[in-house]
Length: 134
Image (cartoon, rainbow, N blue to C red; front, side, top):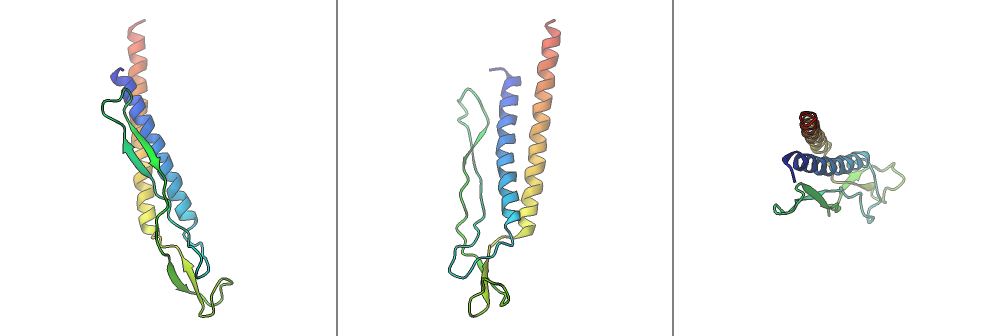
């Protein structure tokens, strides 16, 4: 396979992986304030596991191999007026840090953009190569 097609394939797989990560981060941010009753399972952070393809494979890149949920216990929050509060006034909130999620969001966005740039440059190279052949 040509270097141009390898670049397109690798960048495309990177874009898919980062899109999956962006979706997971968005889901986590959307549920950062999801409250559950004590004894119920709290919202679990969605993670993304990516693996590089075999270097000897015909098409390079990465694949999303799993999107597991984190196994975190949640944190007790005192909110006696919440409808789900127990007799002691506690509810369970997810163990998520907005600042970490926002940092991950910026990293994922920039990485997606970098892969988009690589894809565009590879496409332009391919188009120029076709023009030479005319």
